[in-house]
Image 1 (cartoon, one colour):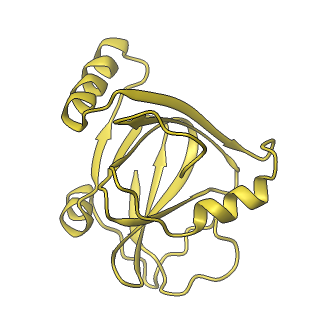
Image 2 (image 1 turned 180 degrees about the horizontal axis):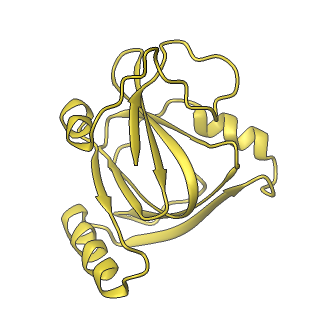
Length: 159
């Protein structure tokens, strides 16, 4: 996982890093303090360790439903979906995502117009707290497979 402050008004390709200049990286601890976002590294190759970590998160967050969500250029209406995912949104429950393959960005907005970009990759588990404005996009590879966790079954594709 890599985390940094984004430039205030990014223009051009959303899938690029959009660092402030000079780059201002932050740690997972700082991300937690600034935005309440939690991060866990999950070893997807160690089944016992993975099950233990996921079980703890599921219990703590009252998760009862999971799904697999793949974003790639082969999706129907890919560009429209990416526009939709990039629109800032606020959820009524925590957004919990484990990257199984690929890489993507979650942007979080702890203060108005102050965005922090979180690049997550295989094995990264991120918990964005309910009520925090956030958005989602891919990297230039346009591919990520995510396991999502919910406290109830949801309909449709939300980012």
